[in-house]
Image (cartoon, rainbow, N blue to C red; front, side, top):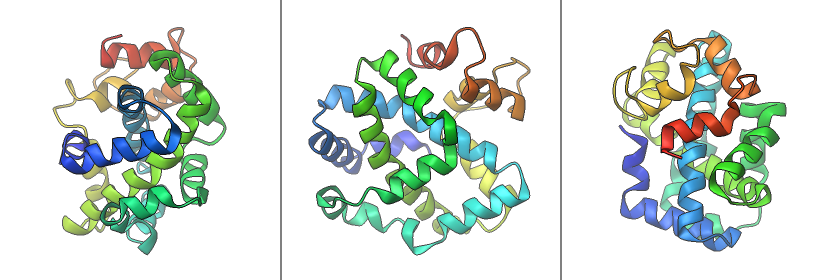
Length: 203
């Protein structure tokens, strides 16, 4: 299942519209931030899933009632709510101290203020987790291998052409390794996150 299927659907349009109304960003701004943020979210999750403890933690989250996918059935309720604790918790767990750098990098690429990017990410994270939770149930994903396969295929294509691979294969060896994600998140490459996103999305 390609993650772009979600955001190209009628449901995806509702998500973009709802996030835009909540954060005060235009459709174009909201879409551009999402285009940069989703690969980062999935890439970090995939990296965490490379360890048994990490994979079990992610599976536990995706099979919990919080991320069962019910959020997609009540988007209006989600957007009218004021509790951002789930989104903040997800981002803090996935990106840790690198969250601010990610927000600034997405801001630099999209022209959307880092404050607005932060708001969008907080709303986007539970939606992505809910979508993954629904897929986990649908595909009966119960182990580390199944989870890794699902995450690696979320952005479609082969290792040489998928957006996810282009993000994570920073050393150019055709494999997605811990050193690749380390470079991606830490920004220790000269080009930084903004340059990576620019390669992927054509800017």
